[in-house]
Image (cartoon, rainbow, N blue to C red; front, side, top):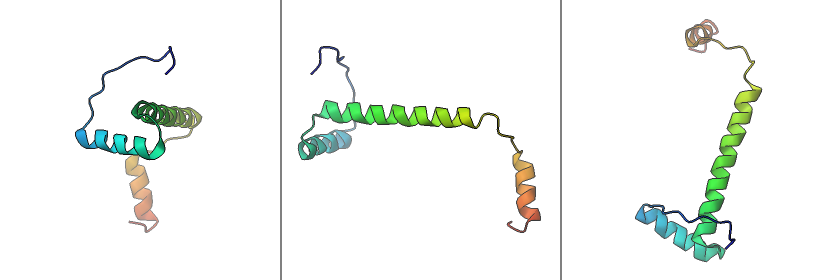
Length: 77
């Protein structure tokens, strides 16, 4: 463990804890490594989402009502 790591108390659902312990054994990774990877993956996904929002910021918007009316007009609804 790196000297730069921080300790945190995390309360897990008992079934999730059991699943993590089993996965830890299966993958030869510590529970901490699995949790760190899961948190990194989640934060990375959020970062990707934010980048997508930024990229689409200037796209024109359409009101829901207009969209539904268009679907009806086109025979989709």
